Image (cartoon, rainbow, N blue to C red; front, side, top):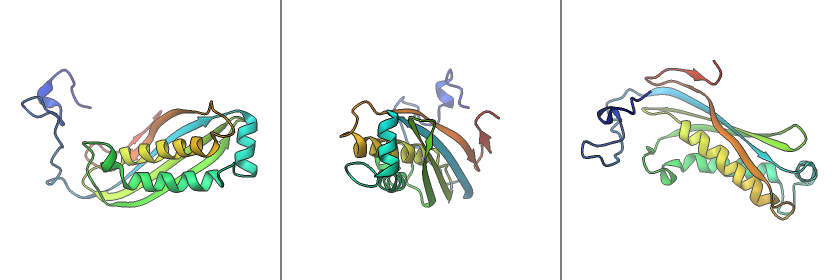
Length: 164
């Protein structure tokens, strides 16, 4: 982890204090993978509609899954200091959890010089937003929660697993 008490050790801060994009040109290309997750909480009746009929706008799961995949591929357009990188694969899954929740998980892989954690987080976030868009006519109180990295592999900092 970066030492945030020493400004000279912050990788995305230039000597003059301005934000900058890190030069990764000298880093080796390695296999990298990140998994992120999140939840959309809703009334049990709303979740039942999503599971059975897909909701008023159509197939909630499929549209949200495709939105998450597309978003992962466009992360550098959304997050200013993210590198544009070749995404090798994106898998977004949405499964029921409890009686009032849909759990979203995104796995993103690449062979590149920098990791895909942000791509996985963006995939989960946009898939969750899409679930809300697809169901907002049924319920206005849908809530996205717990968006987080679950694991990552590859790169200089090595492998990491939540809770390990």
